[in-house]
Image (cartoon, rainbow, N blue to C red):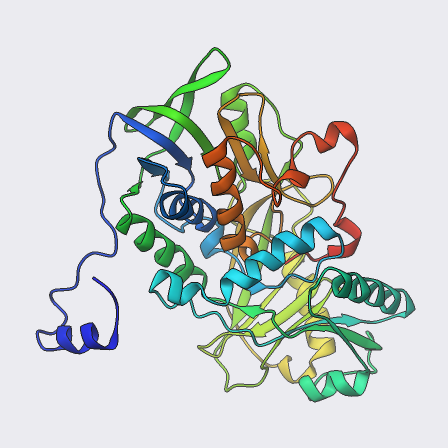
Length: 414
């Protein structure tokens, strides 16, 4: 059923009892052409574009829990593309371009809000960094503007420009903003299901049948599923576990990344404001909550919870930069599990198993790449080789040394 004003009015006549389920809950078939492991935003987007643009045949998504129950629902919803290096800028800007029309594409409101994103500079080194990144963005076709402190105040009137963390300027990306994380998962799930993709929840992958260097079948908690063509592993935070099942290791480490929201407030901040130097950023949700986060916790863990010292580390700079928030109460806190590579860039790559491909290693900034990642990775799965957007992010770069080193440029890479 297509969502529209007409269908909303028609269903109101019988108290909305006749709406179709947004997606099916099918039993897994014995065999598929393609299997996508992971029912988060990236996995669902991959399955959707596989079915829509590549005539992929039968496709299934295997999710060990419920759709969007991992990092897709445990992030701070920021969208941007002002990265330093050309490979990163191309991939993330492709994603931003898809975000702009995604609600119409999926017939589902993902609540994308291009409200603008500010990166603050607190010292001379920061000013040089944002100038360098701004020039690089211009060369790569990404919008970027350098602001003076007075121009920063025009965007955020209550900011403390001369406190413990003086604000000397900022880099603005006007096309940056936020989107609704749950709606992204639901929209891709509904659209993929409408194209015949089987989305199988509560179906944990626990191994592979590999013969002749290829995956013949995926072993799951709901039985064995044969795969005729290729498997895509899109399991944020647990990619190392899946790789271990397939007999190889990945250069990733897994850490918690936490955030928190305040009690709802009247509209007070109409853009996203980030500070890489103090690892703290803030935006305001449509419900009025302040959405606050920072860097990842400094320890390895698979637990979806963070540490109180990280909350204190983030809350201090937030209150220093925005004194009016000092009496606001924190409503709730959560943590996602992220996998981080040595160069802080993702892996969109073939693996030592010929028909097993990976999409992982997004670190602390995977949400913004959701549609671009799914679009590019679907092309890779369909053809069996990385497309031009994925090629720089291959696993081989850690052998050749051709790294996409965003670690210094991205810092807080949300």
